[in-house]
Image (cartoon, rainbow, N blue to C red; front, side, top):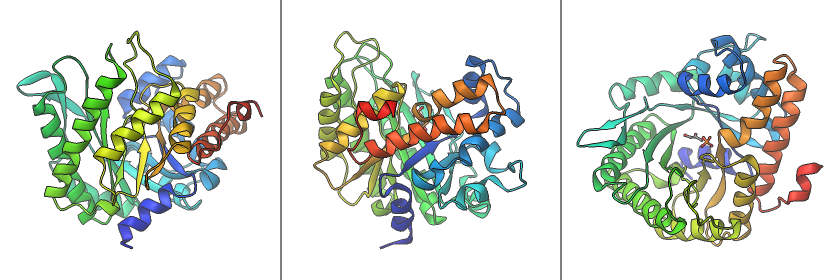
Length: 336
Ligand code: 13P
């Protein structure tokens, strides 16, 4: 077993999942604006530190994705944030892309940037304690999109990023996110997500990536949020499994889904059914941002010093998702 494979399994095994707390300052400001809390470095740290010192870090959360600001901060007790995370057995990770920019020659689409100087940034993050990384490619669905140009340029960037990350001894999260925005059908999402993921693996293989040492972070197969033809959770799970079975090589140890704008319960219910029906060898778990933090953030915003109360809400959500990652969740458990 390679060292990279060991790290991936440590993050994902036994129903554990990933807390995606890597919102850029811009995105975090939007989240804090919705609950009327000023977006200062201190407030961003206080909310995140509240989550990182909760008990679900021991039982449920196998990895935390940080943003550059947070990995360089220290907690109120003076501990470096990566130390606070790893002393509970959780693996610290870091977002290393520098965001999605307009794609030249297809200006309605995006290409993710951040390859320049990446090798040096990775060395610095490794020294700060990071052992895995994230890079998100983003694709939208419409009649003509995603274009071949967007599919192949983002896959190429994801592969170049993955090679540098593995060279530095860390596990790359490969995140091709096909957005749920739009009127498209679930069938369309299935076809286009499959094209996107297949192209990613084509490039990862050309770039000689050790597939046992990556984590794939895809979207689930859903109808667009403005589609008239929504599908049931059972159909989400069967279409998602169909897509991954035909698109992901067997060596990949695990798949950690993004929530992508689903409600907290929806994201948990869909993950639970994916695991109940899982007829693959892949670990299937969560790498949620909004679907793990939304309720906790809302509660915290009413009294930002109520650490215990905020942690109770976060712990519940983490526990529900860890049960779902084992196919053991049910709606009744939400009220216990
Ligand atoms: P969401 O779960 O809120 O989609 O965030 C996950 C993530 O890391 C997006 O890049």
